[in-house]
Structure formats: C-alpha cells, structure tokens
View 1 (cartoon, rainbow over the protein chains, first blue to last red):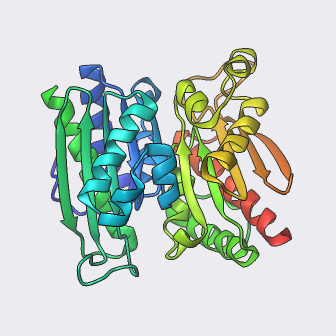
View 2 (view 1 turned 90 degrees about the vertical axis):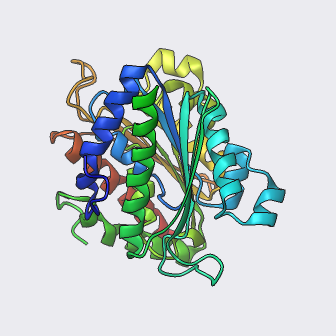
Length: 171
Length: 171
C-alpha cells in the first residue's frame, strides 16, 4: 500500500478501505467515524466493502456546528474558543463518536475543503483529524492539503482510513 | 436533467446534487440525510458542492440497528416487526433526522446494497427511501435495483437527491 499516492477518485481508496476493514475485523474492533468536511465520504468508502456491516457502525456527518454539539457533545465553548476546524474540536468529535455509536475506535475529520472559507491563520485545505479508542489510544494529525475541494476531501479520507488501518494492525 | 440515466461514478451525480442544492437554498430549506446502505454517500455528494454548508446540516450514517435507535429514535419494536429494510424504518429514520439536526427536510435510505444479505422476501437491491419535511410532506419510495453493490448505492443516492430536488422546486 503506497500511502503517498494521491487519490483521484473514490475508487482509488477502496483497496485501502478493504485492507483497513480486514485489520479491524481481525482485531475484533467496531468502528465509527465523525465527519465534517468529508461529509460522509469515509462512511461511503467503508460501506463499499461487502461485509462491512460486521465491523462498521456508522458515520456521524456533522456539517453544522449545531450538529457537532447535538450529536457528538462537542462543547459550545470549545467551538467559540478554537473554531470548528481545530485539534480540540476534532478530539471531542472522535470521543463523541465513540460514545454515540458504542464503538471501539473512531476517527474524526474537520477541515476547510475549499475553495472558500480559508483565512491567513486557517487556510483552505487545513484539516484536523483525530483517532480515539476505548483502550485510551489517541492520535492527532494536522495537515494542509493544496488540491481542490474534491482532492482535499479524498486526501482527508485517505488519511482517516490510514489512521484506522494503522491502529487496527497494532491492536 | 435526465433522471433515468444510470450513474457509473460519484461524479456523475454531482450535477444533480448541485441542482438540488440550488433549489433548496432558493427555498431557504435546511437539509439532513439519514443513511444506512449508502453509508454517507449522499452527504459526500452534497458536500462536493462549494457553499453547501449554507443549507446542509449533516448525514446520520446509521449502519447498525443500534445506531438507528440511538441516533434517530427508530423504535426497537419496529425493527423487530418489520426489519431494518422496511418502509416503516425508513419513515422513522427520516423523522428522526429532522429532529436530530433541526432540519426542514430529510431523506432516509435503508436497503440491501448486496451482493449478500438478500432473501426471497427482501432481495438484494431492495431499498426503501423516505422524505419527511416539517411542513408535513411525506414521500415514500420502494425500489429493487439490479446492479452490483456500488451501482445500487449510486442509484439509491441518485433517487434520494432527486426526491430532495423535487421537494425543493415545489417549496
């Protein structure tokens, strides 16, 4: 698996989703995702794999801030203090998805897919990802993609799948 | 828009997602989705459109039955009596997504994407969709797709977008 390859379509990511699923299923782990800027893409990719219902519980698509609070228990104060695209919110999203779905491991993605919405401090393409697991594992990633909206979403999904896969093979 | 065309990739559906978004935005309506067999695909397609954060609240990806109950308030008794792939569950999923996200209109999708999981009574490819809106509108669709897993998901997403679009242009 060459993880540095840039995906150009959803189907490019299906082998990684399959590989991840095999690792998670082998480890007996149940997965959920919390998706802001990817909008459900990771859930879509995972459910391209026949049998994914055995280990995938669902994706909480939380595009609005209100949804982040209501579904995932992201703190209103954290959104105000750090903004929706922040390491703090990504962490709370992942933790919220663990509880909401009763999952063993969850990955959260929040970012600015572009082309608009960027600032000097938070450029278009900025994405925070966070993996949380019930065994206490935490992994945070901050990236700035430089593709278009579609490319940035695909790269974010790729990294999320990669994080879940790496967690799965170590578990 | 030729709604009878069979989509062969995600990008084939982006024009419909854009057209739907324009109709919904024009009508000032906020949208959410509740996705079982599509796994987040509709949310992914909607969020391919720049500016969709103005009218899209999120997708509740509820692959497991427990998630259907926990996130969307689907009744356990309804799941037992009719199964997860039923008109009754689709309706409760749509109603649940309206409340969960505080949306004006929501579409729910529950089905058997295939290739496995089908029975004589509920064949692979069977999908129930339901649109609910806060103005009391309801629309139910039952279809049996005959493509592979990927094709059945794309056709389901296309119909969901079509239902939202048709609701938007009439609102």
